[in-house]
Length: 208
Ligand code: SF4
Image (tube, rainbow, N blue to C red):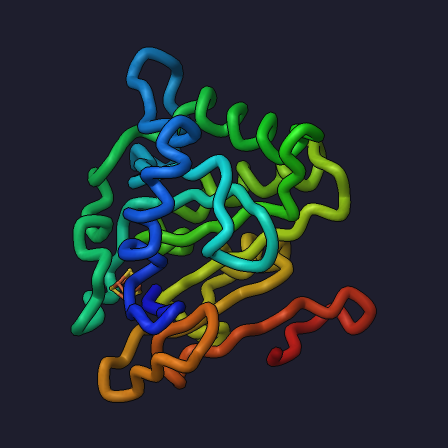
C-alpha cells in the first residue's frame, strides 16, 4: 500500500524505513526456517520484514509486519519486492510468538500492531493473519490497536477477508493510483485510498 510522509513518497515506508533501520537494526528479525511453519490451505505464508519497534506505520510506537504477496500490481508501487507470495521468510510460530511477546512488553510500550505488505488480505494470507489477530485479541492487553493496509477496497472484501477486518481497528483500503498521488496525505499515497476506523459502539466502519 502506497503512502508518503515527510515529503518522500514510498510504499509502506521503505525510504524512511531504510533510515530507521540504521537506528533499529538490532530490533529487526528476518525469520528462521528451523521451527514449525504455520501453513494454511496449502500455502506457506511468508513475511517480508518485521519491525519490533516502529514509529512510521500508524499512530504511536508499534510493531509492524510486512506480509508477502500482493496481486494488485499498482503502477508506481515502491514495494514490488513484496509481491511474490514466496518473498521474504516463512511466517513461523516463532515469529508469531515474538510479535505477541513484543506487544506485551512493558519496557517498550507499543500502542499496537500494523499489518502491511504486500497485502495482508491476499487470499493466501488471510487465514494465517486471522490466526495471528485472534492471538493478539486473546493474549495481549485489550487497548492494543491493529492497523491494516490492503489494496482491496472495503466493499470488495470476501467473507474470509471480512473476518480479518472484524479484528482490525484502522483499515486503509484501495490500490495506489499514481494519477491520484498526493504527498500531503498521511498514512496513504493516493486520494482514492480511505482510512476507516472501526466504531465499536456502532459496530461499523467510519471514515476518518
Ligand atoms: S497494493 Fe499496490 S502499492 Fe500496495 S503493495 Fe500491492 S501493488 Fe504495491
